[in-house]
Length: 129
Image (cartoon, rainbow, N blue to C red):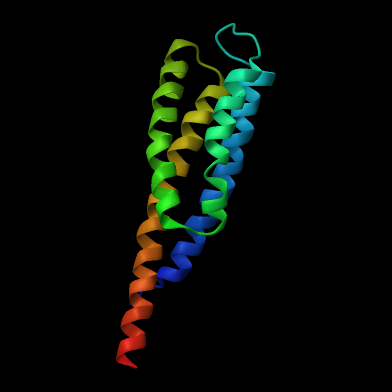
């Protein structure tokens, strides 16, 4: 059985893109539209979070594996904050934020692994053929 790492990398990249967009939407909803914990909408906090995440967009669109690794590292901070928020005051928005961050982290890590293996397969095939 041969594993097609290119196909796996494409699927994980699709998951990264979808969950990245969902995360931006959830941050907007949780900060501006339906803030939890009896907070008021805060455009400054929203702006900081969005700017941090949008810095990774060019690298994600260029399929840069280092950008995916850095995004995963930054997602750990977002994960800590969102888990803390879920335990402080549970809501559907805060719970979905934790889930989307986890899926985005895992799909980003899988993309890095599978994309690098696909590149290695190409190199081996290029040199053997």
